[in-house]
Amino acid sequence: METSNTAQMYINEFDPVNYYQTYYSSGKGGIAREWTDFALQNLHEIFGSGGVKGDILIDFGAGPTIYQLLSACEVFNSIITSDFLEQNREQLEKWLKKDPAALDWTHFTKYVCELEGNRDTWEKKEETLRRKITKVLKCDALAEKPFDVPMPAADCLISCLCLESPCQDLEAYINILKKLKELLKPGGHIIIQSILNCSYYHIGNSCFPHLSLSKDDVEKSFKEAGYEIVNIKVLQRSVISEMEKSDSNGYYSIHARKPQRVRLH
Ligand SMILES: C[S@@+](CC[C@H](N)C(=O)[O-])C[C@H]1O[C@@H](n2cnc3c(N)ncnc32)[C@H](O)[C@@H]1O
View 1 (cartoon, helix red, strand yellow):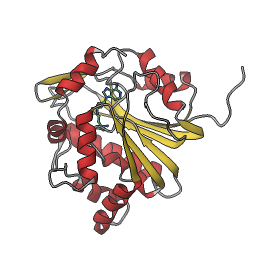
View 2 (cartoon, rainbow, N blue to C red; view 1 turned 90 degrees about the horizontal axis):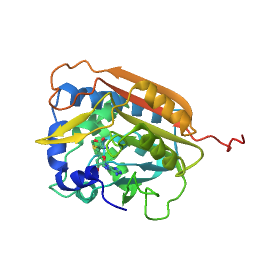
View 3 (cartoon, protein in one colour; view 1 turned 90 degrees about the vertical axis):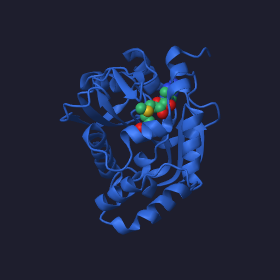
């Protein structure tokens, strides 16, 4: 498949360490903090007691990040994480191997332990997550098959801040959702969290294009892709500064399911 301009830009310009320093390093306030509070609290609710659980979870387009897996790792046996870029997969491998140069996520691990009422066990949680991640795979949302290896049917797929990156229009977003549905067991869960009405985000001097979606666009896309929506949550952006980082005006979290049976029309 031909490499699109956006894909080439990601390959050439997405610097995982700069991304981490811009949005995820310890002590960040502003939109970074607003996003991580929103995302981590939702994931805590979704995967918390009595919530979604199962055997296999796929994290699609993880980038160099693991924060999004800190709740799920307690309730899944095996986690397959993935990203489009080699430089991001390298960072994930470094974290798994406890390389001294790995990115530090302990502030988020402690935060999630606090949500769970167990702050002291953050080292144990990181060990649990390391043990549960069984594979770090290459994924490509635009390829006919998002993974180039055979995949086990998953109980759940999550993806944060990813699907709008490779998409040029709503049709492409719907197509990706349809492809992701094929990776799920009947009744399987999909959880997508991202930002609303955002046309770009910056890492240093690099400005990455982003498909701008409203809450209605997201809802309609999931319906059109054949999912049953369980819940959709939005939060308006309250930080009016930092428009140079991104022009998003809010955040969304959608939880949906692949139907148990194929509908016959
Ligand atoms: C803004 S980052 C999000 C990273 C991480 N999920 C997070 O929550 O911070 C966007 C991600 O989309 C990925 N991406 C870009 N093009 C992609 C494609 N064609 N298929 C899958 N992922 C892609 C990038 O590699 C990058 O990791």
